[in-house]
Image 1 (spheres, helix red, strand yellow):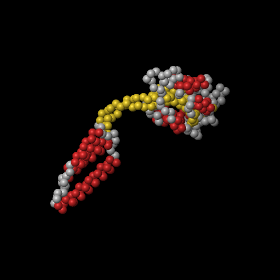
Image 2 (cartoon, one colour):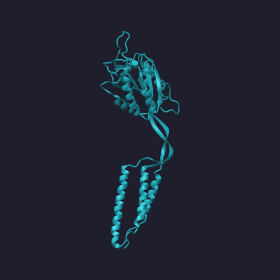
Image 3 (cartoon, one colour):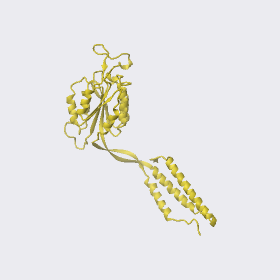
Image 4 (tube, helix red, strand yellow):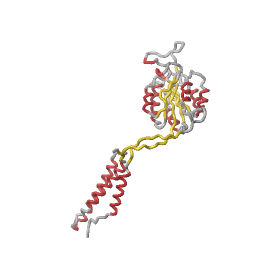
Length: 331
């Protein structure tokens, strides 16, 4: 036996008020009966009756639950892919403590805000990998996010095409660009969050973006870094900084232009995470406005609230209390 609600001070206060008023009623009746040589004892069984149905009403309000019942839950959800840049430039400290560490903290909060949607994680630099497929399991995704570091992918310059192609390959059949969906497969709304510093050294991005735009997936880009830039610390805590081909310290800067263009072409929006501005709350608002197109029926086990039984018995006893009268004071 479980309870949907635990008794608290409102229930205790209601019981105390009932006791005080009823005690006053009993004392007043006894005082009126005393001059007539009566004591009003017939009121006792009414008191027991009222205490009984009062307790039953309280039990019904607290929701006694016994056993489990399978209930279908219909939801309209969407798929959200998180694309995270793990190139070495994400170790830059121009966004404290580093671009990647700040981004991980914000993405962890994002995941908690979308419990009814499927989320997946793709990491990339020169190549892209599915770190976590689409899932409703927030704990699993949080675990993957917590382990992100630039050493997870082969060292190389950033290429935005491979992660976007991975998203295209994993769109649900109804949202994919090639042909209609199979019968019985509901459409899925897809949102893509691309978090990077915008330094794209890969192949031409335009053909992939055009296919992505036709698929209906919306790309929300998050530029991480500052336009002033920063040197890139060496990995594993070693002293020094990454050097370019000329032997000078390499400087990485936020490049917003390609990220803005990518978001505009797919119906998304561009946001920034810098040392001066954090637009993740705006990103969360934009993702909330992407309405899920797929209605799915999921079966969940819930405790069966049996409040009807004590409520019905209490109403029966209340009716009995009204119908049966007691002459407390006889002439």
